[in-house]
Length: 234
Image (cartoon, rainbow, N blue to C red; front, side, top):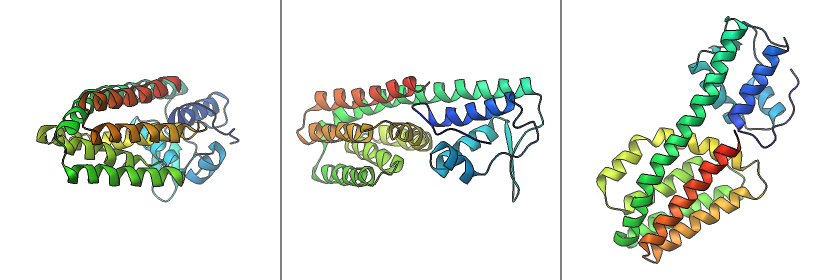
């Protein structure tokens, strides 16, 4: 299979689109083996981790089957059924991520307000260190999903609201998966990772200045920008 490099579109969606195109054009048929992670990553100009995540989603939705030691195979469904499953994957992935961001806006917006009111010196140091790790990862062109999550968690911990901390920890896996997708897409837009980093810096500054309302507004605005990016990549 010969794939063109990814342009400005959702990374996981592009992989699904290429599989759909290949099915429609008869390049791959139900039961056929897909290209390897390495081949897909090279053709699409993305990381193998991103390809692996997309294939995991397709496996969970019943589109492909991973056979240990052999590779990834398109399931033996009819073409119409495969298209139905692939289209459902598009809709569910977008909806899940947007709903997660709405939840985070509500939770983390108020947490940042409390953090600016209640933070102590150790809290500030924790947030600062998380920000420095995020900045280092951005400067070395890493996706930095874990570092982004750690920064937001440090803010929620600085709220000194145990229920908020517990809630964010409960959805940590979904948050990191969402950050992986959003930040991978941001890396396809020239200069975007540094713009996002600056948003994090400004949130920290507002908390450091003990300005609760500014911190809340900046964090909500930051996540709203992520939502717009997700929608733009549809």
